[in-house]
Length: 225
Ligand SMILES: [Fe+2]
Ligand SMILES: [Fe+2]
Image 1 (spheres, helix red, strand yellow):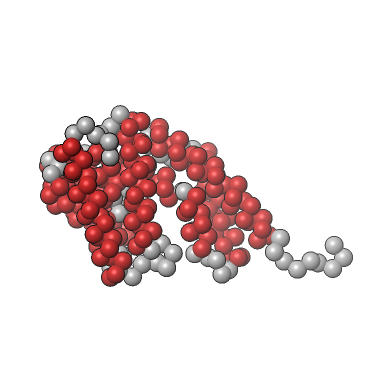
Image 2 (image 1 turned 45 degrees about the vertical axis):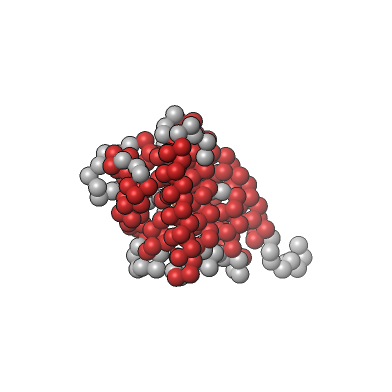
């Protein structure tokens, strides 16, 4: 990571090492979805950190804080992904896990608060820390959503219903309704995040429309037509 301040780089490296270790442990222990595996979650984390850096730079925000928060935003998947009902709480759980990691990596209490709050609110906008919302929240949320609409995600998403074309088409019709809504509004919170998100929505719409058409024509020819 380019920086003139070596100590800042070291803090992020410590966070990267922590996430890598959690991924390694989880891959061996936690029962993940057959498509959205522990490897997928780790790789998603790396891409979210990449987008977080781009957005932070464009928004003039602290790159290191944004990248570290992005790296930890889904860490609860690794620690709690086998617990019932964990998903709704994975932001707040992740913040709790991340606090000691970030303080241990050398971040100040104030910096840690900003990052943990961003991690806590990234799922449903709610935290239980009593802290005010801040700009890092928007970066983590936008970076996460940019990757959730990636080209790779199209492939993986379709794989979840690969054995039932009709089911896949139904799922894609529902998905398209959401995508049209996203295309016609600007749901992301930062300018850079919105631009990156809009590019991905524009990629998904024609591809999903084509897949639905493929499903529609997958039927025997009717006699006389
Ligand atoms: Fe998440
Ligand atoms: Fe995520």
